[in-house]
Image 1 (cartoon, rainbow, N blue to C red):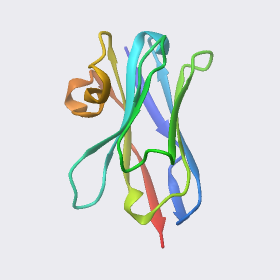
Image 2: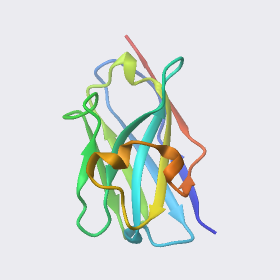
Image 3: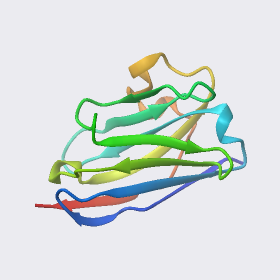
Length: 129
């Protein structure tokens, strides 16, 4: 059984940083296409960042490009999202997600959380101005 558990959310002031973690159990992370999605209050869900297994090609939404970094630690079977220069508009519930290969092509990895087979319970990020 595949399980994803996020951690690392919290409340911070604008300009600060947070690192989200997503521990995956039940399957090897390096066989999955993985990504982070977020649900901002009152707004549509947004694909934030995604990364392919093996080649580790990464993709980002324009809203976070240059500020967020997605990475994996295969030894720990953990997916990370490093978030720097946080803005109030980054406030959201953040979900990690995983699906077996083949991965969607390029930025299509950010299109739809529903295309991922597994997702975590979410971790909340609140950024105050």
